[in-house]
Image 1: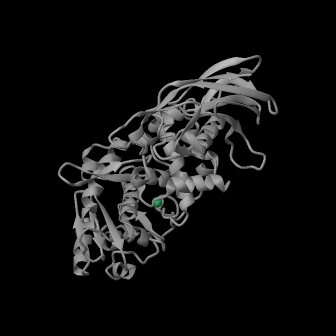
Image 2: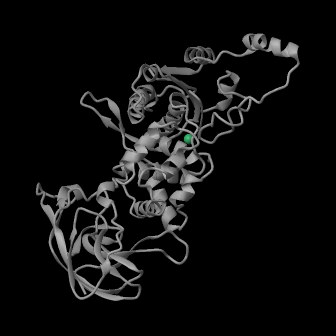
Image 3: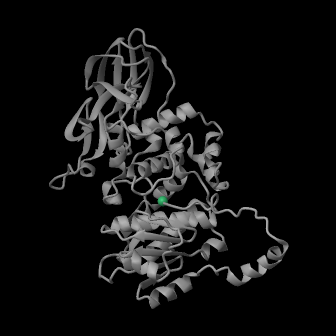
Length: 456
Ligand SMILES: [Zn+2]
């Protein structure tokens, strides 16, 4: 959660008597409180018996008792590593970012922070659930899971950095989405045994985001027909961290724009412009932006979302195709997602399919299939291999499907109509037939080869 610096806090023009007008500058000089510095905060905190941990970019104040191996002592150093990654994202490499510093309060008992004057009681900080950021100061409730505690620290840290160094006053979807996107990380232990921050904006595996559950949450929203579309996410109001689904959706919108081959370059440009209220308008007027196509690309991303989602290999060609007449042979690559066959069907049309060939799906060890030192390359024919299943079907299975907009109002998605070496099916919509080899969207990179599919 974050505070928007513009809006309600802006000074309103006042009509004052002339004496008051003349006195005003003096009063301001005398009574305006000097903004507390990190050094002041640290001094106040120590006097109140709180722990203070410091690094170049962070003063972390906590009432957590010191405990070996809880990872709290590493947080300031990891925060510095994360700040370096965020500055690279925004191409901030000047002296200002080198000197940038934030104060974070990691709180078990909020009363101790209120009593010490470190948690404002003047209404500027609302009664938040997990975290709240105001310029270069943030507050977060302590979490039992060290990975989620770090995630929350980095989430609030991204807010603090964008609010100050970029003067961000952005729509909620971008503000929360980029905080989630840039906070997502894992720790890798280096040769010296030190844990290091590794940015994983698209997590590669569940271990990367221990108990965060964002991808599972989005998959559940899809199953429950509650997943918002891209335009709906763009207009989501600010939320609290209580609504994890909205946070996951905001992350998805930023992940999509930052990585989809059709949008990522233009979106990088938008992120380097002022981060203000016009950001959504700037996105919707990016060169080559087609709102309808972007909405469909986003739905296709969400429909197949999984760990390590490979945008380049999952990009969909939406060309309408030519009507299928007579017999046609097409090929389907094992290392890509849904591929347009180039042949269109009309709803209700019967079609038969025959597939042949052999593809490879990488080393058995990559799927836990190696044993007794042997690590063969896995091969598959169109009926797939039962060593591993993905979304209810053996990996390597030839799949045929169409992009279908359900009548019940749930989001459009690819629907599998036929699978395996052969069969007959009925077209579910007017449009091209798509083909793919069943595998996770993060597992395509080591696949190779093609099936040949005959359509009648
Ligand atoms: Zn937030």
